[in-house]
Length: 549
Image 1 (cartoon, rainbow, N blue to C red):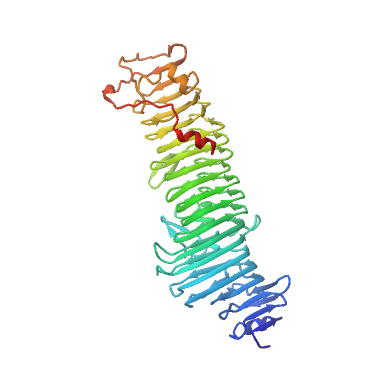
Image 2: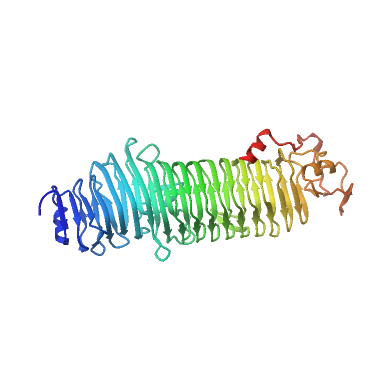
């Protein structure tokens, strides 16, 4: 049979047609098996007839090698899970436009773009990868001293030229299943390096993604991800409308190194391994909206983590972490607005973990802001609760400029604090802080700015404060406390701010029967000369606007 259209009924016919440059449209009428690796001619299209056909390749053989402007549609393509079902020929100068549509795959889809390829576009829609194993592939994107295991589908522009851009659109991608998760990452999209080979995508949308990495315990420089957007990757819109569930250690549901304008997640994210994370941002995201829960299981498995990059607007429904040393939200960068439509809940305890050559104590805080972090507006419509020992509902070594919590902020475990601020400042309106086993609020060299209608209820003491915090000695008058906290608040100073030395065995001193001041017998030097400023309980004019937003 000759001509640009070919009806294919046997494996031999398909093998011969892929060698013929005049054969453009190959229509598969029967299921075919025992195929060798096939290299497609430029602009060749292969499609299954009617309800689709299955093309099975020889065991341990790769599948289709694409050249330029190829199309695969309405097919099931099967190889060994550890082989490439579809891959790019690295020797061509231009990919043209590759189209993948309505295909079901066993094996990896690999577009690793070499420096030979100057331009190209990939248009993939309704692609499902049933099985794939990529953990054995040693060539991996690397950033922040971490290797990202390749995905069941990997698009990686490795060109070193700064004007080599690959255009990309992926819609309705899915991979793995509950019974057969992908061994490795799910979908990985990455450029080469700073101002070099890059990827530009208008839309990436994903259904269900199930992965299970095989990263062993103690391996700190390797991760897997359900969906990874790598460096030098610019995406206008990402949509996860299916579940992202990861079953291995060091696995992230979503990991961003790139630049995304808007990211919508409309189904749940789960991780089930130690040192995992629901979402990590180390790139730039303008808006990230997650309308379903993030839930993690495992020691050190955080909910949301940001250690680099930028994020303007973060909206979450709910975060739940179950493991020890598993903060729900942790960051050390600037976030303009963080909104939680339901609640934050952590179950784990603080534990000591080995980090590099030292042992550090890591908590299971609900919100943890490390040095350098600033949150302009925090709004929580539900409760913030920690169940474990030695934890914090809100722990800040940075700044929180405005805070609104509709529910309660409750620390239930031994030695746990509802709010602790160290060398930063906190501003809140109408918040009730509760510690069922210790202190509700703890301040160290900290400020409480623009606080209004707060409540503090601790089992042992309501507020634990040091003299370097930005309050003066007169601010804790009974009248002032009732105005700010609207409660009978007990204050315990870690250093004595009164001139007279307290007795060695001090007892509680009643003051107007409104609150109790406990003073220890440590007298700070030159306390009168310290620059200690009073709190302000009057909210900013913008506070009321933010509460209504």
